[in-house]
Length: 298
Image (tube, rainbow, N blue to C red; front, side):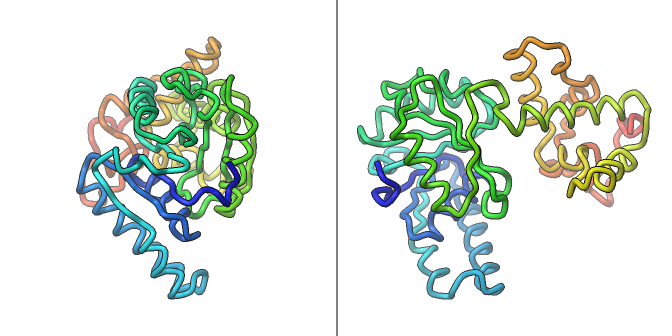
């Protein structure tokens, strides 16, 4: 399948990742069917896309006509069957292998025979996801960075059976979105998270063992290594639960003790301190709320 033949894209998951991916496609004139089982999530998604389009128009990055056209190309649905005509379906749901495998099995039955099934997973085996379908040659990893409309990278991951044709079409689509593509073999964490998550985990160990304050850890990495965000701040942005999930996948998949999650990271997740999305993580984003009993560990 050539990228020019990709006229309809399905996106499963109306969160920030799915909404951002849908925006990328719609802004380039591709019809997008965005699915989520929660109607409220779809309402938020449409509002997010509309707001982002208006920002692009106001900054001169998109013409008024192109902005209006993008919104016409976005279709929201709670019925998975509506994705049946898609040329590519990109999954952007919770980072759980069991949940993703169940979805891929369902999509395999719904999607037309030529459809490519792509996963936005940041760490889960594409080969194992593909094994839940009868089209493993058309299953591929298409890992967007957060937020998709801004971040320039897409990490493409081939499963054991992913065909050259599926890879070429997916790479071309990512480039059509204006992204730079890197390619990874199907190993836990792929490229980006294989390197990033142990750094974040080590930052938690540095905090846990009292080497330095959270502010000094982040400032050290921002000013000392020119990172735009410190590792603890970045963990809050990603979601501490997501970071923990990826560390567990790395630890289990690679069998190396250096990937064992820091106890402080585990404790924060157990306490519901998941980062920005919950208003509190390593840092407190609820300016008027008192620190919880865990604040002594900061």
